[in-house]
Image (cartoon, rainbow, N blue to C red):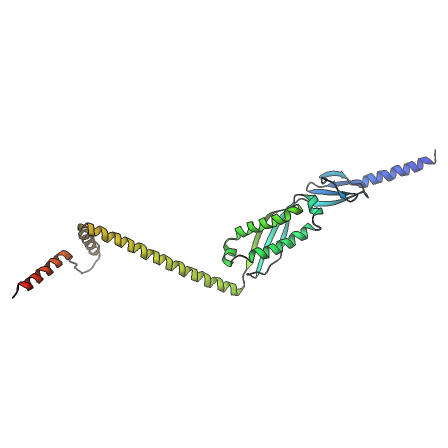
Length: 254
């Protein structure tokens, strides 16, 4: 009986050390994906105190905090396009099971998506509609990373450096655009002025007194200036009557 006591004590000591080693503490932002005999448990463990019974269990720690990933520069129509990607793990089990390294996979996907999306847009759209491109990039990335248990919260194209050739091309394009708009505005002004003149002529034709009022208004405008010019308005009706009288006199003369 006395020989069995040391064996029991040693066994109890070994079991106690094994239980102590099985205690794991996960932080508030951590979750533990447990593989028991090679099969993943339905729900991740944590946060707080959990038990991992080695060698039957194996734990993979996954952080739920938002990670920041700087996408390397991609050569498209511009020289460099640098983007920043913000994402977080929403399903630790999928992040461990569906992809071997979700950080590396997300980085590679972000590079290819950035190169593909920015390569499809015009240069002026890239510079003026960056917010729409950011939303489009986020939507595409989020769609592909959702099966991995990763949520892309925001994508920001933070730097667009242009080569000298592209800067000169933008300047020529902007100048041509300004000239085009100036010609359109000038043509629209001419069209509107012609319409108004036609309307004014129609009104004056209906109301002969309006032309006399216009004469008087012109005299008032000229009189406000310091000049020696004297303007005497002569109605066209008088000239027409005078012309008819001269023609009649010429016919009556033998």
